[in-house]
Length: 194
Image: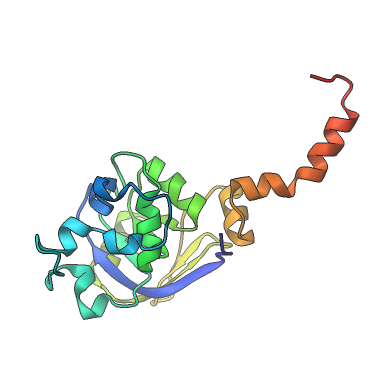
């Protein structure tokens, strides 16, 4: 995982509530164990017609969405079944952070483990973001703040371990592997052996 200290980008706004993981990446794309290329499956049932052609009216297919790395989503984003493919698809597409008033717990966990930053904000901040699509924001991981173009800094929750992993570019397994010497010392000095 790459280090993630902050994300500075324009926003793309998808204000619908209850967008579930099957809408983010439909189940038929879950046969892969690799992340590369999953961006093409992101919102596939909404982005493409039955023939596989991009729907020009869909938000992410519009020119103004190109290059936006922050998705402002409606309430309860990422609900539904647990699938790491959902954050993988968002990341492969170029989304680095998702902002909402509520993000489903399992999706939040999967996102943090993969370097996608879930940002929950109050309704007033969310409403302002929805009304002002395309604004440039900064998601500051170290400070746990969303910086808005009008100068406001809005705090968002992130647990200490996830923050450590993001800032250091390490996942949970990498963190444990980095502790191998300390684990060996403990094993060598404990009074009882299994």
